[in-house]
Image (tube, helix red, strand yellow):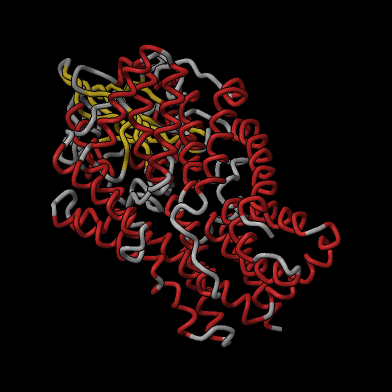
Length: 585
């Protein structure tokens, strides 16, 4: 009965993770409540994962990463890439992937991708090269760089913490560096050769053409006898018909309205709305609708510009609608369209709930757009303007990071204490303030990992891990230990599609450890194989690092399948063949 309940919960969790009907942290916490309520796990076991030292390591790395970004040291490195780009775009791409991989070996890969997306989009415009040729290699390099060290991904840290809980030695900081380096090099060679040939190339278009806005925009002339005269723009009869007011031309002056602006006679209103609604008001007294298409020049003036904004990880806009966050009042900008996974959304934009990786086409004053460069909620995909390099603080931040690695590697301090101390030092030396440090931590990820660790305990307590392990061993055991390992590796890669990497690994590891015992094999080899497998699935763009480059690179879903599938198969073979070499079974 307990086995059936745990496996049923697992299936439900996979479905909910895939559909995103509920947020992942809510799904995780509800599962813990159910498991503890039916006494499959005790309350202590349910929350043991949240008090583990690997949670401290992951949180500390988020803070250290934010401190490096805050000091401008990474922007400083990107500026140097521009010089390489003038000599050879291939050399520049190689350096981008190498730098990204090295940085990602010690930082969360999604954070690293977010740091580099904006400057690389600006750089691609400067060198007249399609961003699609750069951004997917960037995301893949960030993902694969994380396989080179224990702290390269939260998945590695979580798996190490789990196997330590079972009595096995935790994974060393650089224990996986040998095989991780091979995986990373294979990925670079593939993307520099076969991958580059398969990547799409997109010509630059005007933003209004790219988002297909022309047929949705029109100009309305307000005649002197119009009932609109005197009405507040954002509470007028037009807005009640779901029209959005973009700007006003008054006495040859083109300006953005605010929440106090009233409509005057002879105003020319640039509005965006459904064509059916335009037809409804066509015969309205006191207005004249222009029939001509609206061009980009009508949306941009010397002071008013169009720009694209990327919704980044940990943005407080995620899960909220444009209307809910009062976007126009908050940022002084109007959202014209949203690009999501290659699809342009234009209808009822105000009610669309934003997601990670959404690309917003916005219109606003150049001054307000400039202020967004410092925002932690969005990244402005415009001409890249690096943060001021705070040299002294940058050196302090990177020194703290290096000292944590040295102290943890030499076992001068426990790894969790070393990284926590480094994070606190960056705050004490004012490389980052306390508020930004707290904001940098991905609390949803910590809840997911802490909760799925407890789910692994439930798999053991209920007997579900034994049940599945015996079934897999009886099916594949006759083929040998390597074949069983290969089966778990492939299963992990498949599960990372509907689930997060860490969740998939923590579900499979308890089963794999039991199977290793049944086969009289080294459980550690199986755990590391699964841990690595969770980081090499690039068949679809569901990995957060890939989601961040999806819209800015103007990719289609098929682009990831076409480029990522051969690479994923290649890396699966590398893992299956080399794990037994590094960790004999």
